[in-house]
Length: 456
Image (cartoon, rainbow, N blue to C red; front, side, top):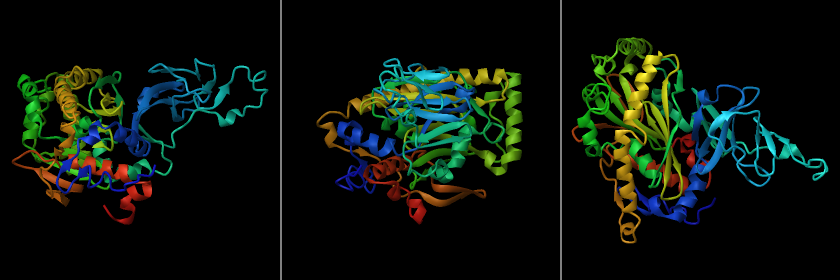
């Protein structure tokens, strides 16, 4: 999709030199329709986890942008992602959230599709179509590219997009903090329980910004910290452990991903959070010891919220989740949250984590309720005629980012900002909108994949 004004978004609506961003990008119906095309049809998007479709015929109905899609495993155990729309008149061929089936049958006119997407049944094929309909041309529409990365399923509609591995770049090591086992083994995660889903009356970029690393809004969670919902009974997480750590923001300007990190001291003791029940404390103590052996110095690095551009929000440790911020018009977001545990963890450990995850996140979680209230009111107060004339300020820490950042011999990729006295910086937030503006202005991936010619 060509944009007439090539710099309409970069340096105009998103002015990173001054640190100002127009409210229009959050409330404009026109801009929203353009970003569905420019951002969501070209990005790699999180669809689900392989543990949700363990057996042939299993399916899970997910979403990519506003498109309903079917994540399924066919009879040959191959994984697919299809547009959930019949090729005849567009009806959803699958109206259940999840299940197992040999075929998807459209309830409108009865066309049916195998789990590999092929059209296998057409009512009145002989009498109405005279056997001339070429079924091989009318299978379900499949995504252009799919990647199973450590059990997580990602997809894109754009056949010209880089591979998922290239799309992530060096950010992969930070996504791994959410996906690898607690003891440092590669992968090994599974989904616990179902997927939480709820609607928030705000633009999807509000929560995406928040999870990118908004470290400035802790006043919002003061009551939660006072209650002490964390496993250790202090704060939301293991606050004592993190208070001793050095805190970083890491951004990847050429890709749009960003995250927060904590680098713990070498002598950091295991947090008291896991000493409430013997089998739980024994499990995590063993895992921490194994991780030190496997990861060495990198075992001291723990994750904080981050985002795989555009809308996959990571919470790597507590709670260990991926939340997808599905756009539902310029004024609504449907948030879906997946919760991860180690596949081979004892049942007692999984139950311990499940209870904590519920206390912390989701529509019933104390922390998420604070966040949703902020986004709701901020969005509503930005829709007015006068309000839309005035930009937001993203000026914290302009120019503070450092390349080739190191701590005790640990070298970090991307651009890094260490949060010291202020404990706050808006570099991660600016990075999200930098990449969003680039997608909105660019005509193709030739312009977006700047790392291929050595530029940021």
